[in-house]
Image (tube, rainbow, N blue to C red):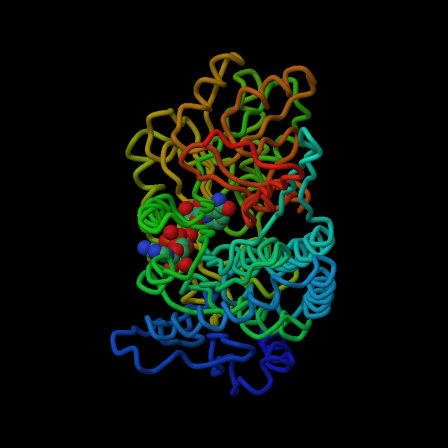
Length: 513
Ligand code: NAD
C-alpha cells in the first residue's frame, strides 16, 4: 500500500501538493481556469473534513463555498458561456475530444485518487474513469451533429428550429461515482454549448477539480467548467441562483425533492438522478451460473453503494436453494481490503456513520425474521494501517418478505435480499410494488418472456441476462421517484438544450384588422 501511496504522491498533479504521507494541500475550488481558495468574505462558511475509507484518516479539509464565491463562479461561467455558445458544434467537439484524450492519459492518477477517496477497488475506479472519458468522447462526436429542422409551410413560408443551449448549468454529485458523475453531466452540457458549475459531494471532492484542470488544458475557455466545494448550504445557494438555468442532480430522493421545490420558484430546468430499490428476477429456466454472476454484479460493486443495484433478488421456487448455495459461496469468497491492491474486490464503505447505518439494516432484518446467510458484520483487515477503515463483510439475507424494511428501503451497502416467487404474474406485481424505478433485471432463456418482463417492469433501465452495465450509448435515468431526465445516449441532448421555432413569412401577413 505504501508503494502505491508513493506513486500517488509522485503523480504529476499532486507532486507540489503533497507532503510526506498523502495529505492534500492544494485548493479544491476551481474558478476561471485555476485552483482557488473560496472567497474568504463568506463568514458563515463551514469546513469539511475528507476521510479515506480504507484507513479512516483525514486526507484533507476544505472551506465550503458561500454566496460570494458562488456569485464569482457564476459570473465566470456566464463569461465563458458567451464565447463557448457561439462556437460551432464541431469546434466544441474538438476541445472535448482532447479532454477525453487527456482523461485517458491520466487514467491511473485519477483512478488512484478515486479509490483513496471513495474506498472502491482500483480495478473499479479504472473502469469508472473509462466510462467517464467515453462519455466525453461520445458527446464530442455528437456536438457537431446538433441541428434544427426545416419545416415547409404554405405559400412558400417556412419555419426552422434552432437547438439552443440553456446557459449556466449546475451539476450536483453524489459520493459513489465522483469522477464519472462529473463527466456524465459536464460532457453533454458542454457539447450542447452550456457552461457548468459542478459541486461534488463534500465526502468526495478530489477528482472533479482534476477534471476542471483537464478541460482547461484541452482548450476550454476559463470559467466553462468551474468547481465549487461545499455541502447542503452551498448546493442550495447554487440551486437558488438567479443566473443558473438548469440543475442536474444525482443523489438521494429526499434531497431531490428539496431541490425540485427550490428550483420550482425560479422555474429552472432540472434532471433528477435519484435512488433505487431495483428488482432482479431470476427464472428457473435461466443459465444459473450467469444468474449468480448477475446477482453479484447487481449487489456488490462499489461496496454495494450503487444507485441501480438490484437488491431485491426474486428467485423462482424450484432453483432457490441451488441459487442461494452458489451466491453465498461467491459472496464469502469476495476479497475485502486495501482498495489500492490489484486483487481487492471490495473496499471500505464511504464513512463510519454510513457503515453503522448499513449494519443496523442487517440487524433490523434479522429482528424482522430474515436469515443472515453470510456477512453483515464488521471486517477487520490484517494490515494495521487499515484497522480504522470502514469495512464490512458483504451480506446475503434469506427468507426475505416483501414487507421487511431491508426489502423496502434503499440500504446502499453490500446487502442482498433474496425473495422466493412462483409465477411470472406474481413476480411482476411484487417487483413493481415500490415507488422507486431506477433499474430492473431478468435472467431467463425464454426470449419471449425476457421481453415481456422488460415491458412490464416499471424501471428506466431493464437488463436482460446481465446487470449494471452502462455503455455511454444507452440513456440512463429513473421512473417514478427515482427521478426524471436522462444521462448518456443521444436522448440527453434534450435535457441540455431548448428548441426555438423561427417562423419566416414569405408573403404578406393575413390580418383581420
Ligand atoms: P445526498 O442526497 O445526501 O447528496 C447528494 C448531493 O446533494 C451532495 O453533493 C450534497 O452536498 C448535495 N445536497 C444536499 N442537500 C442539498 C440541497 N438542499 N440543495 C442542493 N444540494 C444539496 O446523496 P448522497 O448520500 O451523496 O448519495 C447517495 C444517494 O445518491 C443514493 O440514494 C443513491 O441511490 C443516489 N445516486 C443516484 C444515482 C443515479 O444516477 N440515479 C447515482 C448515484 C447515486
